[in-house]
Picture (cartoon, rainbow, N blue to C red):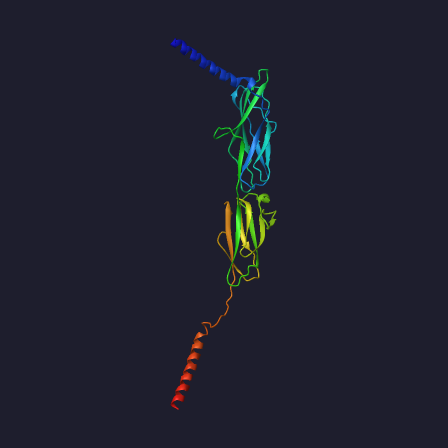
Length: 313
């Protein structure tokens, strides 16, 4: 009885394994994938619109008797992600196969030069498994995997880094006027071969000017004492410089050391301090005090002399 039970359990296990293998290989369980969707994700906010470019490499036969992997009719494609959006996608048509097997195709993203954008340079592979459909045809099953982790991936993930720049205006001294206006410029210069796209920059009440030759962007503000302004969504990979233009108001402008540098933080704050003072004479000054003391002593001495003379006379 015990031996019979062991035999029955063995048969059940074998049948279970066979059933599982058959379910995986059962053609009726699968639908041919004529295409696969490649996703592009952009993390962050305030990103400008950008078109990302990709290339599909030559295929490789991982399993099966095929001598080579069929090529894609188009081995490059693009995905556009709109301004402020975080995702885009593209449907890629798979090539036709005439042999069962397992095939691999590398997919790479062409690194762009948009300031603030970190491009996904991790390797991705398109794995296509081809099985027969039982009627002389073939079924294609495709997935994207990360080369390093070998885990399934939806697509490519980029990150857009940007931050805000706040400029404060402070007046000091006894001759300041809060109604006085000052012109302040903020210059943004892309680093190296980067391109500064101002589409995502928010500069409320600022006048924006772009130098088409150098790629520099200048934002001009008119600001009064005690006020401030903030430029939002300045991308990383740029140099910034805050400068107050000279005026005829007689103020002396000083900076706090944070008025320029590489922009690589989510928040940067700098202060321009304008000083204007005058000397106002009030009462007796120290310069005249010795002479006044001499005069007082002389008058006092004369008065004593006159009084003593009257007494003795």
